[in-house]
Image (cartoon, rainbow, N blue to C red):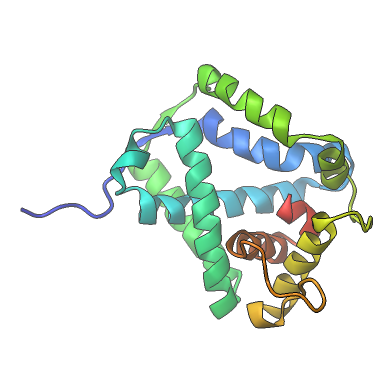
Length: 206
């Protein structure tokens, strides 16, 4: 009995997906640090890594049971890590554009577009946002450079910028004289996003 590797739900909840775009750009836009070109580039990136994440992880039964608002965020996060690692091997932005074209073709051919927003699922995220968005988080998301030597955020930004510039984890800047003690994979996605969209590493990391 054959199985379809890429078996996924065809419903695409547009406003659920655009929620993640809004979350990614709202604070830098309000701070005057993003322009229309930046927003479009980030949209292209999010669509591409979503498509990669969906292609690889949609066969997992547990993910299929998750509402689209959460599932699309998971696909974006995991797809971003996969693309970030691939970027270290082949640092070509053209690949993201090619994936985006595939996403657009699939979107119009195979998707059933739903113009709804999962309000109840969003309400479930509110406690997470209350915990996440502290005073320093807003500073991190609204200023172009984070220059305070007050903890790991400074070094997180340094790692992302180093991966963006060097495309090599072995050359990345970590705590001077200390072993690598971070979960490195998310930094790959941030570095790739910063390189692709030409936004500061801090915003890509946030």
